Image (cartoon, rainbow, N blue to C red; front, side, top):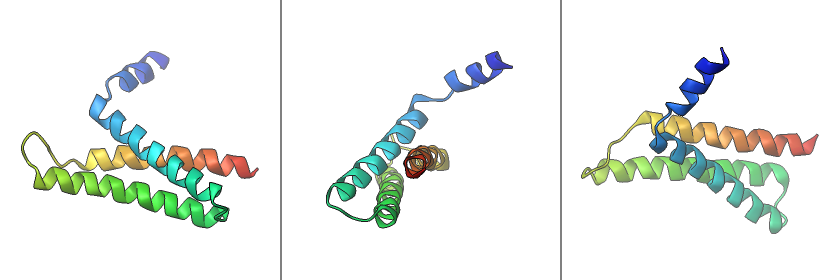
Length: 96
């Protein structure tokens, strides 16, 4: 069972992982920046998620416009959302 999970993990394309990491880092950076300037937790949380989601969608719009070597993939957005959700869970755990 563990070997199947491991094989699935290592089969994830690098492009998808980059979308995951980039969205997570954007969400975390924006949250940290807002938190530093004393924005309350929930507004900072929502704004950070929104900015990261806009960045994901913006990247896919860019891929649509610049078709040379770029493809529009919903999987990229899905992996990006997964990255945002990971950061959201970590931030919510901080509230406990």
